[in-house]
Length: 434
Ligand code: PMP
Image: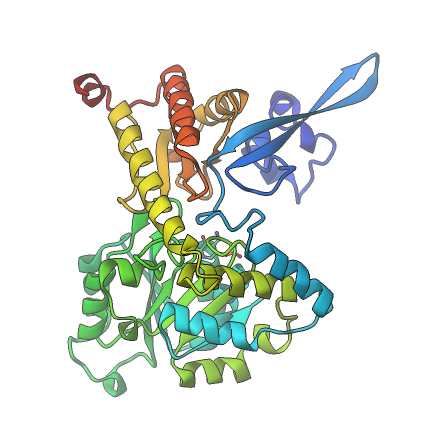
């Protein structure tokens, strides 16, 4: 069975059975490479080679120091921080690692995102997949953007509600889908659905695109549908004071019913939150099994969230580092995006978004692109099926406030050389003009 695939799937040899055979679809060595350092602007990437010399299996481990263009460390909090780290260490001494101390974190999160109350969970993924089934059930209608994250998709499926999708980021198609279900202005009590909720993301993580939130909210208001906004990639990363897509696009947070986010990205911690009205949060506290039956976040993770938000809010030691980080991520991102475009790459996403996918299209280009960048000390995440459609493979760059201008210029040089080698500068004419 595995004969023709030997070179591509060495990890699987001997393991092919009913449970593992799907792994053959992946090009293994470009995914899941171990990292032996904190995910800051530079990382140590570990590569493992297996060689069979003299019939003895030899394992070689090579560590390469790279510029890191692949992590969600948007504000640089994933590395040791002069304000946060001592407090996180202190929290370990003060509490046991398993004690729950998250009450005031929820208050701070609610204040930061601009909602009356919040509830937190040990994992971002679980926040979506466990909360959506509590909010929605049989007789409800979930209208979901086609490119919503897997945690949303699984939450929606588990809820038992009817699911409809609308074309990615298209308010007009959302309206079409709504119009198929209900009449404009029909009161909530006179509709065939118990509840209708529209689920979107602030920044789409595989596209780097900002949500068309003002237009989507206008449609939701017109049809009296509730809104659920996943800000995993936007909270802390965009907006003048880091308050995400609402702040950037001038949307009143009162117009978003449920605001969801994670602590794994801008805050350098782990866990997730839901922020909403006091009534909704109270309801979730008493009814959500993932809140009642699961273990809470540990104190170091909680402390990291509290401390990083305080830095962003300028409530740390008056250092103004939060504002500087926000300016830095915006400037870094916009500089990198415009330089990539000038070089002739097809770059997805909007200005101000720190996520910028470079289209590779053909998945066969992934290994060459990924390995060649790594060989030249730049680590970039490549994304392919099933996270994207089969022929829309891409290299997904995430820019951080912790990147220096030198890091960015060096990375651009490498990406340009590798781009020529692999043949992914799809707009060479613009390139020549420049
Ligand atoms: N929502 C979105 C949009 C995400 O991209 C992710 C993960 N990257 C999650 C939810 C899950 O968050 P976490 O990784 O913190 O569990």
